[in-house]
Length: 254
View (spheres, rainbow, N blue to C red):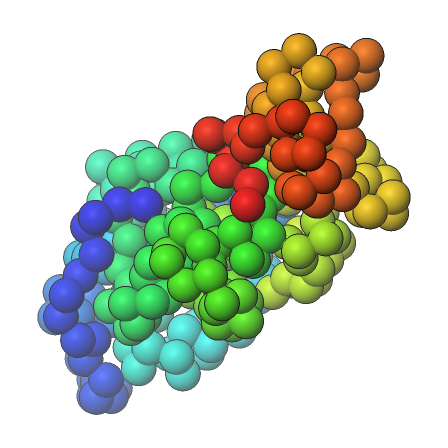
């Protein structure tokens, strides 16, 4: 997650209808929006001088505009492209499935929500983490429900990958655009959705390597390098520790 997060309050007053689009954009009374190819269809991305402010997978531009204006109190104006540097950063973030240094405008989010979204942005592509894991990362281990609420109201889905947050048992759970889209996004990033579902069915939350005696979340990149011959499965961390395994320092299971 970038540190380029605006600190000023967003203007919320309506702009006169006669004001030109250029003036609205220059004065911060409107954001601009571009449409580009995303990992599972067309992606619409809104931005302003502070960075990317919103995104959606919805194909109807008018619906995106309506929702944006209701939420942020600013107009949304479609444009062909963002300024060159920002446009390049947006495309790179979409193609790499990583936020990187892309500037993000979270001025209307609370400090807790910003912490949560920053933690979520750090989850690698093709990997998932439970809501409780995110809560622990922000120092609020009992705030899983609040993390879920933040995911449901994430203003910049796909770019801030709330689709990588799952239920405590590893099952996919809900998503802004439906569980099928969530699975499609994860599959596009290289996650074996069927294998994850089978682990959930069997009640396995962790996997480990018999050679390193390190236990991970099943989608962790370290876990995916473990061969079937050396793979061990665990229902709980206590079970893994009792078997002589220690938590992975990369995915940091509880």
